[in-house]
Amino acid sequence: MNFFHVHENEMWCEEVPVRRIAEDVGTPFYLYSYRTLKRHYQVFDEAFRQVPHIVCFSAKANSNVAILRTLISEGGGIDIVSGGELFRALKAGADPRKIVYSGVGKREEEIVSALDAGILMFNIESFQELEVIDRIAGGMGKKAPIAIRVNPDVDPMTHPHISTGLKENKFGINIEKSLDTYRKASSLKHIDIIGVDCHIGSQITDITPFLDALERLKKLITLLRQEGIPVHYLDLGGGLGITYNLETPPHPSDYAGAIIERAGDLGVTFILEPGRVIVGNAGILVTRVLYTKSHEDKNFIIIDAGMNDLIRPSLYGSYHFIQPVSPRGDGKVQADVVGPICESGDFLAKKRILPDARRGDLLAVMSAGAYGFTMASNYNSRPRIAEVLVRDGGYFVIRDREAYRDLVRGEHIPDFLADGTGKKL
Ligand SMILES: Cc1ncc(COP(=O)(O)O)c(C=O)c1O
Image (cartoon, rainbow, N blue to C red; front, top):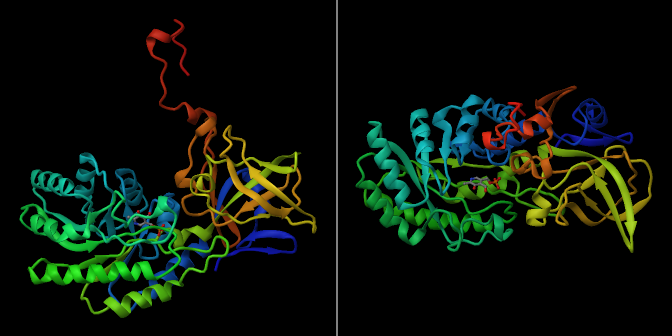
């Protein structure tokens, strides 16, 4: 459930007409609903109320500090995968004891920052990483709290680019080798084993893969405990899917209920790392039609947002529902909705039946709150777009639209190319 709705031929976000924001801040821009964000967080959190748990919002889905702060103020922790995300999480006011750090390629300076901050745990993805963290923690006179990210070899039945829990994926340590890795970890002086972690993929719309992974983890936990290796935390990652089009993903309470039924008595604190399910349908991309054209039997709607702003359709063939901000008639057209980028892969929809669109119309690209802005780039030297948060009857720009000067910030013309005038960019 979200708080974007059409009323009297106008699209609203909570109590604010989307058109008004577009007129004030210009297009394109990302628009988020505070009430939706809070509701999604609360529904998810509430679903696990029977068991000790921490909901660590996955910053990769949307890392704007205002979004992070919203979820932190609801009691959430943060799941990070880089030093940059750690920086953002701390800036947003996250409790370091609710930060978990995954990722196959943690750099030494990132490990140092995370140890300095005192995060809850590192999710370890290789034995070499474990050795490096042990050495760094030793040098800092600390013990690093860790879980091993186990790759359970379960097919999440999602897009291959977002499945992570198969043997062939780069993530985690194969479940068959994990017991051995835990044994080795327990011999390292500056490592404190506190849990088990796994994350099998994203946009998972069926509960079975989660439960298959859980069964495998439960067996591993039994073996670990038999050897005296403690497991206080079980991190089940994120991955719960959302409705973009016709998908019918499990409700968070069904997902949580099934987990609690099978593992509620494990005596662990559960960690969940949801991203998409919290923020995906709490955000839209608002864009304006620049031109329309037809050739042969094809119609194109050319908009001012491109694949650099929202790459999901080009990258994964993802579907985003597109609707007019101010619907006006019954006329329909089949068209490709494309951006201004010089790539044929620059599209937000293909062969889509849409209400007739004209130059100047505003369109809302729905379900764009997750992996939208965080995956945006400056390709074609396009400044990254603004982000706006609506709360009740007001709105707040939570990220300014970039200016052209931002495009060249940090670039330098070396002396040998200077024209002698000393002119700076
Ligand atoms: C380790 C980890 N945790 C959590 C997530 C969040 O996944 P989702 O946004 O599907 O909930 C991801 C995303 O791929 C991830 O890699």
